[in-house]
Each structure stands twice: as structure tokens, then as C-alpha cells.
Image (tube, rainbow, N blue to C red):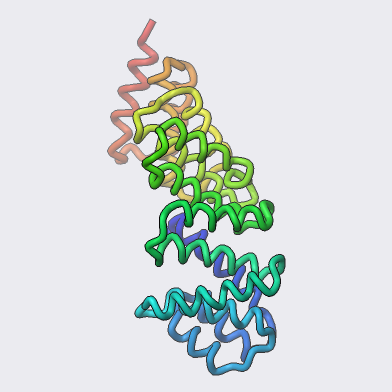
Length: 268
């Protein structure tokens, strides 16, 4: 089953592939890049003269970031190319992708602080909040705010991440939006916060939906358990019934859910 991370990554590479559309020879590097053949992609970009200098530079940089072994020298070269793309033309598609890849470099490949990482993700959002990359960046930024900003209180972390909802929660990328609301609720529960807002985040995630059946069933039982904890008896029962109607009796959660539902039904 394809994970959310894989689907988002595939979507990102599909966008990169679309940028590389052109003559067959020039397409080779992009096809290899979309197939995760990063070393071969890098060699193809090097062998074929560019038909579009900016798209070619973006392809080279994207392959370098993942070209094994990933070394500081490769990262530095890719970063330099990406910064040149943004500096030369701030608003075309290569610039949007370059900005996002720069944020990923700051987050994954450099020893910079979280303020630098946050700034990089916010730059992607500020460039065009309606762009799909802005939604992906907002989801990444939410995780930074939730778990990598220890100087913030729990309430401040949750509030800062929740403020990203207009971008991170857009339904243009439903899997990313669902993951964002699940991340908000998951962080709140991790910090022992259980209230109506957490329940609302999970309801939003459930309403948006996901193609991952395991995630979907997990949402159902989580909604049931939280509704039960909040004293929302009728809602909890509805969630339990929905959950039990969608999973097999062999699921190890089936018995627990059945017992919880029966307890609620028997309660005065």
C-alpha cells in the first residue's frame, strides 16, 4: 500500500516531471527522476544539452539532492543552483520548486536552526499560497512547530500550527490536508490535550478522507474513543458502529470496540 509520504513525494516528482516536458532526449532525466533513479537521472541531465536552461538546472539540482552518496558537496552545489533559479526569476514554476527544495535542504541536510527552517517553508507559502507546493510546505512547517520548537509552550505550538489551516488544510491535496489535521490532533494527544478542538480536527480529517484504509479505520476508532472521553455518547456510538461496519471481525480492535459500544448502549 502506498504511504502518504510516498503519494506526496510522487505528486512532487510528477510536478517536476511535468516541468521537464519537451523533446524525448530532454525528457529522459525527468522520467528517471520520477522513477527515483536519481543517479541515472543525474547522468542523463549531464549527457543531454538543455532545451530549457531553468528546467534543466532544476532537474540537475533535484537529482543531486538524492544522488547517492549524498555528500555536503552535492548539497552545496544543488543549493547554489536553486538559489540562482529563485534570484533570476521569482515567480515561474522552476522558482516555486526551487524554493521548496531549498526548504527541504535546510530541514534535512543542514545544521541550521529551526528558525531558518521555518523561514524557508514560509517563503514557499508567501510566494504563492494557492500553489500545491505551499500546501505541502505548510504541512511540513506544522510538524516543525508542533515538535521542534521547544521554546514554545504546548498551547503556542498547537496554535501556531493551527494557524496554517487555510493553506495546509486545503482540499486541493486531500491526502496532505487529512494528514495535517491528523497531525494537529496527534500532537495535542501527545501533549495530553483532549478537548473539543482536538475532536474537531479529527472530524475534519475524516470528512476530507484518505485512500489509506488503515488510516481511515484508525480515524474512525479514534473519533469514537475521543467522543466517548468527552461524554458525547450518541456520537461515540455512531463512530463505533461505523468502525465495526468497515473492519473485519479478525481485526484486533474489533472486540474492544464492540465492548465499548455495548457499555455505552447499556448506560442509562
